[in-house]
Length: 393
Image (cartoon, rainbow, N blue to C red; front, top):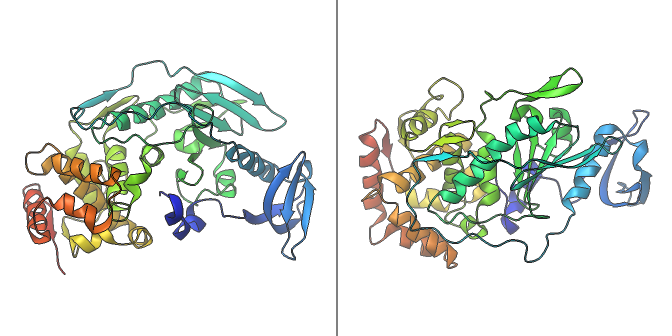
């Protein structure tokens, strides 16, 4: 999921922290109270009670889960340093990568290990990991390779995917030991990770990274396969202007799915051979039955224009069909359109960067065609690959 600017107000209640952070709090004796977290002052959390009272409550008297929630809240209040780093240059003229191989050193550093505050901070080349348990450098290095490889993949795509906000020089990742603490901090139940766009933070339960307890420490299962995390990392790096009306939804989710579904193995994305896995993921349950959209090979998408212009809340309400088709349609423009050089989608992205949106931006995507002509071209291209697209009014 992705939430940007004012548009996020439509979906924030489900996938991010609420504006007032209202939740049920538990004290050290197991008693519950409903209140909203306003701010943290010293060793106290200032809570807004249902009757309007503002009560400073000692953090040490709250449950460990609540204390972890407060620590993450404090982290997210860190301000972005002005002028930090430089925006990567547009790379529309670069070749499409055939394979991404991250073979560098992720440069793992331990920044802080405070057991009393349950604050353990580690950094790799581009990311800062704020965790609620202590991890060894080898474990951090193991999953950091996936984060860094995804970053490299996104930046090498010749689509000027040059967004993202760094705080203290790094993109921020919150790691929670358990799914319970992840859910308590705002992670959607059943999800493997979430990008909180208003705060530019990706939050992940350690189980999604293949990290599990072993004795008094933790170990990493490097064979752990996960598509959700690269998906969320793409959102973190996508420019704000790509989230305009007419592109937010089909393009932004399609791009994130494109990266996530591309075959990955410890630091390597095999882009050249990703077409078959993409089709299998969308139409069935994946090559090995390990997850997919399963929308079948006969797809009626309705009016292509209406589908591309639908509100984001409507897009996410039918996630299987819309995310799957978002991937197929973006993949069409990336690799199947006309001269198979992604020229038309690049013109569209340039139009978004110029501030165009809605029908004005989509007119650039049409590039002189009618909607009926574009629909016919998409249907013809995919029919050769065993997918039957139909478009109706």
